[in-house]
Length: 117
Image 1 (cartoon, rainbow, N blue to C red):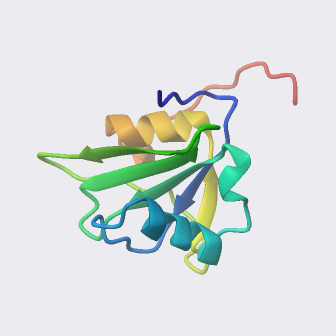
Image 2: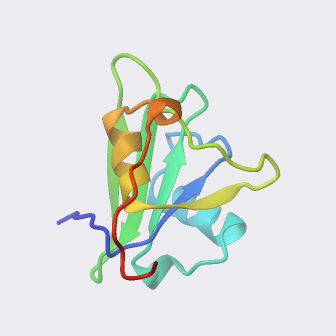
Image 3: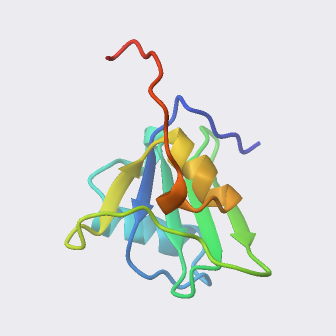
């Protein structure tokens, strides 16, 4: 069963990915472009050129699982990042915003208490 939570780490690949890639192809991208282990239980996020399809790849102890979503209208908005970087870590909140289609430029996050400061 695929489940995502704030306890996991999420890594976005900013390059263009052919959505015909399945487990082996996406694992190859992770091995070549990321410094994180495929078996780490981290979630790796891939988006196509038109930004209307997204795949999330994860290891769940017994094997790999892919969550795949294709939008019928609209596109996914990627978070701002240094253009030289091909990968970036996203927060759980950013992943939820990305999947739900929230316009990231207009979001204002209010201060909240956190244990880390």
